[in-house]
Image 1: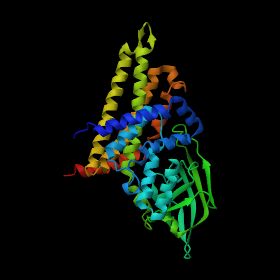
Image 2: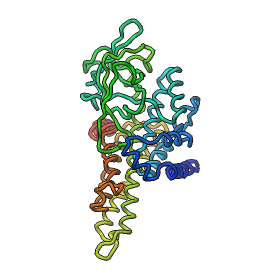
Image 3: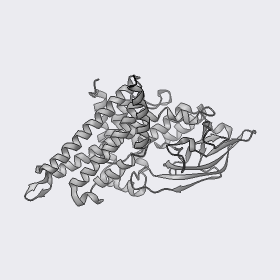
Image 4: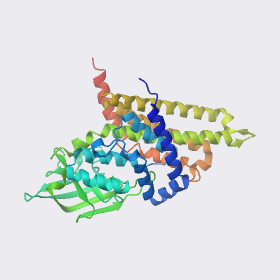
Length: 384
């Protein structure tokens, strides 16, 4: 396996750094965390720079991109900005619509995207009683037989649900019982009568806030359906593996930024007449942090390489998601410790890194669900 970056990937990283320096200085990042949103010009500039088209279909104006390059884009932009950025989530959502939507739906969403640089829709999957256990979903869609459908239920953790004007909602066909695995996907405006949202504040990743969303007898035309009847959730599952890699790349970028800040501080901070980086305990912490960073990067990029070479990664993607997100939180935590008390304040970026990394131990599947997925594959792998 050759993980050396191509000339194009090196140029991409340089372009990302230049873009961050121009549009995301620390004062803009801090303000965006306070506002729970990035300025419109940041979204627009990301698309104009070409980053927002990467990974989308060429026939729709996108740029075909391998997984290793997408992972590089997410890691480097996150590291350079030292912040949670919303763009890779928008790319994933746009990709879902482009893959499963009809021609009219895809054109509508792409036109909105090109106008503003923002993905105009969110995806509503999780529910208060159905997170990892999707069979527990109770939101339903009933077909009235007159070309209309009605959706009832509640969704939670809808990322950017209050910001984006449209939503893709997954609902069970007719029957909410756990045994019913038939789920369909619908595209609708939040202005549709019966749709309401409520903010759901969280401690980190404030630039991509989420909310609760309620559907009370929401009536739609059947033409609002996206993809085949009964296959809504199955379709979204196709992209779970790449989503896990991109979430891990986001965590890795934050952890790398935390390491760089902590190591720089250790070289500058003087205690007892010496820089703290000269003390063995600090050196031990930095050593263990570096081991974790190199291990995270190897596991992530080797899995991306496998995916690009059509090698199944059901086991690998679960290992990546579990290990990288946990280890990144540990690296950020150690970075805070090296900063001492100042690391626990908002004067230092390290507290932000820790909060954001911690959130990725839930996003895209919890640590425990990754064990469930990986464990089954490991038993099969070593069966005699």
